[in-house]
Length: 334
Image (cartoon, rainbow, N blue to C red):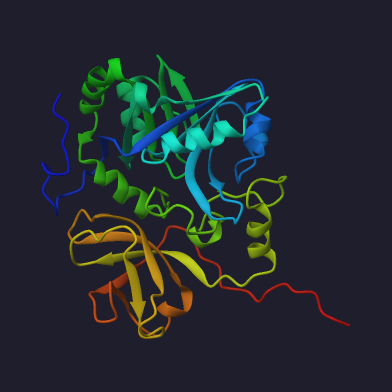
């Protein structure tokens, strides 16, 4: 089975009208298995793990004590005692090691299943129908299922992530190819950008609090759960701070910029006012981006890539609303 690589698919290319699938070599997969898995993850992640029913999936993050995201993830509950998480592949080994340090006497094992299989992504208007036809089962958005040793999980925005054991890779590829168009993995990245869902990898970890990445707007943070690393900082930002930065969806008529490239605006002069978090070729030409930027920089001037005199970056709409900044909720002194 021939699977397109980024070099073999021309850009710009016409996006599939139905479903598209690709291997995702940049996506890793972790397994948390044991009777203490729920309590352990509840104390480590930003979302309410204890509220997940078997088969449910949610966005979540693992943060530093300073409240900055060390990893973003799609976490799903595979059974009463097992959770699995899709994360950036360049973080999976170190994330497993870091979390394993805190297991101590808890009864669970953290395993990096990236080494025993491959992740596949299916997106497009008929992604669910294509997965159903190819694999015989397709979970609803925000749910997952294991079928014939293949984990199939639909993101809350409707894309589908699949973890396939290495031995079944070619067979699953052939099944998907009969019902969806094979594309390069960057098309999956573009679909995530269109959905406004950022991915934290090695180049961007420990830089952003969840709210600046709109993690609170896509259901990745629960503000009523108990403590977890960075919880105090995240809560303080939510209730006492003024949100000055947000994740924006952008477009540039040019090649894909490097992750971490800075953005500039006349509002801030020579001082950078934003950072590229994710980028991918746009199907109709140019590149689409997700970037954290100062909200005020978008009001009265255009954004520029790399320098104040750099290429102009245009704003694209997000599929969800960004609330207006509110004044800090500080108690009045009497």
